[in-house]
Amino acid sequence: MSGALHPALLRAEAQRLWREPRLRWVAILAPLLLLIVFFSSMNGATRMADERTRFAASERARWVAQGQKDPHSAAHFGVWAVKPSSPLLVLAPGIEPFVGLSVWLEAHKRNEMIFRPNQDADPIMRSAASVAQVLEVLGPMFAILLGFAGFAQDRQRGTLRMAFGNGATPGRLLLSRFAVMVGALVCMALAPVVAMGTFALQALPDAGWNGASRLAIWSLLNFMYLLVFLLIALAVSLKAPSARAALAIMLVLWLVLCVVLPRAAGNAAQVLAPVPSYQELRSRVENESPAYEGAEKWEARRQALVKAKVTNVRAAQLDQSERESHDVFDRVLGRFYDSVEQQDRTFGWLGAITPTVALQASGAAVAGTDFYQHRHFIEAAETYRRAMVNRLNGDLMRHAEHEDASASTGKQFWESVPAFAYSAPPLRGVLANAAAPLLLLAGWCVLAGLAAWRAVKGVQP
Image (cartoon, rainbow, N blue to C red; front, side, top):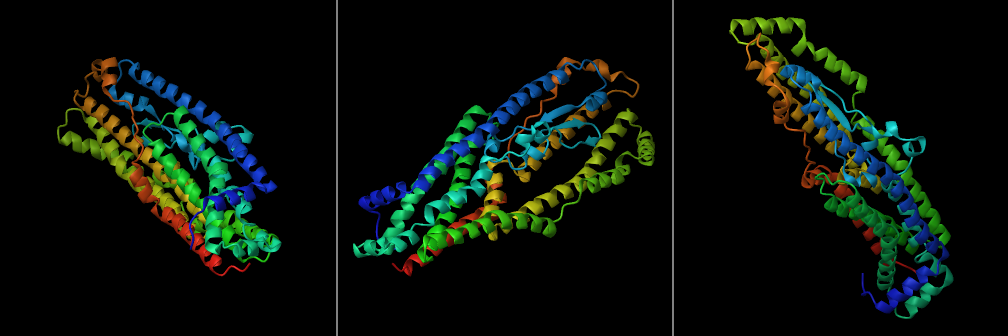
């Protein structure tokens, strides 16, 4: 591409763009739409963050104030582990509205997470769009409206021939128009999103999510996504015989790339990487439970402990049962979680057929709202549950079988059991897990640039 950016040419292109009435409307309506969607999400996120903080504090107070109690009874008394959500969920909620926020941690059981945000949402909020959805579906339309008439309209009016006659090369003209349109996209979509994300980071607890870095990368991904459609629109405009034909072609491409293929990709991922149903999962757990809590298993364990002359047979039985249940949970639930992650990875690879899927998969990962990071919390809560129960069973085993173990418990003892604290996964690992859709989105950007470059080589005035 020949030619450098000239200030006079940039100024002329900016004035030409601003004279288009449709672009002035888009420049006003796009940020306004994003702001409306953002603040509707922000209201719910702020309320949920406050409730999480209060609930976590009251839960710790409840645990410390439980009084004297047999340590294993305290393991059944249990605690709630509350998931600290990423502050970027107000931009890209991902799976967060459909998965639980808390899990009940107790002896012998690995409970599922409950309190899904959508359960408490009103009918409007349950079907409300997010900022990410607006950018995924309407963002390309903003880019198309900017670029479809870039050259085709001038060709119809004859001004393209005049521009070439005045010494402007096709490459310089494309570069100048592209730079001005990129500036318009930044003002209409990227700058409002960065401002909204910054506001969310200030208003919501970060909780170790490294929100500033995630916001920068998430904004860059969405910018690349809009660039793909802008470059395609310019390439089509360079080749189309008229502005109307360019618009028709771009509308068909938008429908296929942003609406049809993402739905097809979701269905394809379900076929290529199926996930067992929830009923099937619970059935597998129930079928394998005799391996650690069946009557025969319990009696065999008791006889072995008596033969070994263990001081507190009951406590040792409880401890062994607890530890043997870990293998069952890891095998059955681990396979289920693996299958969900495999389906997500398959969906990410389908970003090869449309940039919308590449953005959906990579955007949720960077925002901290994909299943990979939800599983990270589940595993952290389970690790805490096992450590807590093992410690309480261990304390019980230090007492004789008929000794009152509750006498040694109390506020100081319960305070010695650390509260559950969660750290979000490192961003580097998250990016590595989402490498495929990230690279595919970058690939779409390069291909769209090459298409515009090839189109400008053979442009006819």
